Image (cartoon, rainbow, N blue to C red; front, side, top):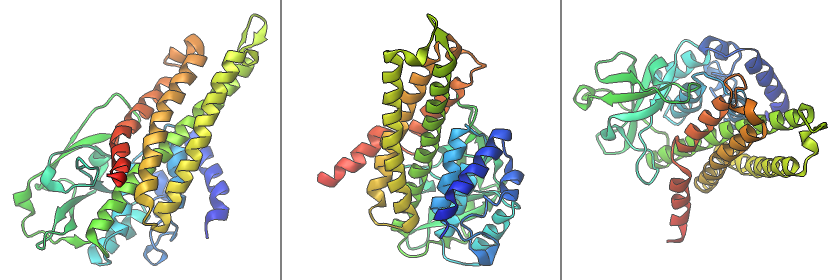
Length: 340
C-alpha cells in the first residue's frame, strides 16, 4: 500500500541525507526508525520494501548512521519474534527513538546465521551505539531464540572494531554464556530456523541496496564530470573510450536494479524463494559496486584520487559491503548447492 509513495520517500531521504549526516534522533524524527513497526506500537506499519528505499539512499549518500544495525537488522529481528511485553516495548521505544536495538549476527560457514555459541562475533554493525543487544542463542529445546540485554550488561562486552571504511561503525561482541543462564528467551514466531534464515536474507539484501545506491551515485557523478571536464578542447564525455566506460557502468547499475528489486520484493512478501533472490543480489551487486566505483575514480583522473573528491569514501564502503554478511563467492556457493 506504500508503493505509490516510494518516489516521494526517496526524494525526501535524498534531500535530508545530502544536507547532513543523520544521528539516531534525526532518524526517529523522520519516522524511519518505526517504518515497519506496527501502528498499534507507534510505527507506520510499512514493510521491508520501504526500509529498503532508505537503505539505498543511505548508500547513495555514503551516510554514517546506525540505520543498518538498529533499524534494518535490530527492528527486523524484533518483528520476527512472538509478540510479548519485552519485544513490544522495544519496538515501541525504537519507533520513537528511545531505544537502539542492535542484533548480534555471527555468520556460519554455510551463511546461515549462527548463534552466540560462535562468540566472539566480529564486525557487528552499530553494536557500540546500542542501548539493547539482541543475542541469538538457543532455548531449552535447542531451537534458535533471542535474549535481549541492556547495553553494558556483564553478559556481553562490546569493543569498537576500527575498519578502513569510516562510514561504518563496527564492533566485536563477546558473550559470557554462563552469565546468560536463566535469562528469558524470546521465541521466534513460526519456524525458528526459517525465521533465522529470513534474517540472513534481510541482511544480505540490505547490503545489496546500499551498494546499488553507491553505484548510482558514482555513475551520476562520473557522467556529470565527463560533461564539464575538457581535454584537447573537448569535453572528455565526447571521447569514445569514456562513453564505453560509462555505458559499462550503466549496464552494471541496470542489472543491479533488477536483482535488488526482485530480492526486496521477495523478502518483503515473505516469499520462500527469497533464499535464492537474496544471494543473487548480494553476490552480483556488491562485487559490481567495487568495479563501478573503481571505474569512477579512474574516469575522474587525478582528482579522483584526492581526498577532496570523496570517491575514496565510496570505494572503501563498497569494498566493505562486498564482505559484510558473506562474500560474493560464499553466496554463489550457496546458490550452487541447489544443484548438488
